[in-house]
Image (cartoon, protein in one colour):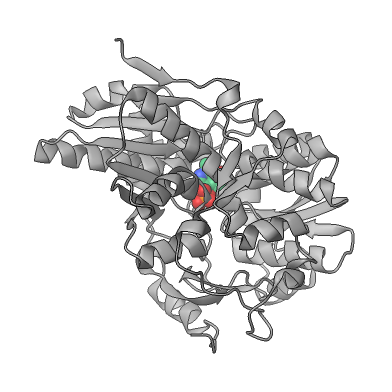
Length: 454
Ligand SMILES: *Cc1c(COP(=O)(O)O)cnc(C)c1O
């Protein structure tokens, strides 16, 4: 066999169900009302989400059927390929086998449309006309813009200001799909105005942008809200990629010893790992699971496992999760998709259960890995994805040291074609390896809500 080894599936092998890991986990800590601190029910979320998505959010069913119209749109780019990184293995001179699932073949170049399409679909079924959302790097905004256009829904995107300025192409892509893109903090909402009054030069954060979008949805009857990560139903939708990967690894005649994914809010990581973790929870094969995050926004490695607000203005529900505090604003580093102050509740709970290992890396070492990967495999990873590449390469180098040939599977969650400025800055030696600010973090953590349920 040559060095190009890929595993392709037929269209009719697109999974018919999403996998819901809640069915295989201990009971989750309740979600709390941001004002009263009391557990909330489906009706409390109804102003923000269509009921079908709320029911998925609280579902205990292991399998959730994928509606046929959603599968039909998935067919445009799914099943996605799984590759064996033979040339990278040779370059590293490692006895490990390295596989990667490639989600960059989607219309917007990442895994995000896997959930944008069903979210737009369920909103359309519920008669919703407008969706407000936030975006960090612009991956989610452009994905929801694409999905909204397909189902005839207007999409308004609050984009974190630092990314809005750094990534004009992502804004143009959203506008190409017919969406409106606004720099956040903006003067269109009370939450945005409050931030601007205090910090006129604020470069924004996901927490602030979420507040703006939630406010627009909560104060307009014809508008709902959508989130591209963190929530249970989002993680569930992403399992389509991990289920495909399982079939493809079967085709390869291998089972992963090690899984690696990058974690922002946790959705692409969950997409790859949850089907495997679920198998393990049901008594299946053991697998080491590595979550890689940026040292500048180290939710899993440095955050506290506590109840926190999902957004800066405390409009979104409180969730028990690993958090840096909802007031935390990470330094402006380039992996814009990895800047959220919290981690998905289910992933946080799995870490507490000892089901995963978390690692934090600085950005220069991640770009170094990204460039090495691109030169070997011909795909330029998104800045977020370089974290997974770094993690996978380090596992492969450890195999070399130990002289053991393990099987590594990582998620290449997106390509970096809209992020080449970050590569330009890397080549020019302009990327700073920033740590989170210890004092600011301590302040943000001191602001964690006091919650009776704990
Ligand atoms: C949004 C995004 C991320 C971070 O979000 P997760 O929910 O953690 O997956 C990572 N990589 C890419 C390419 C993204 O677009």
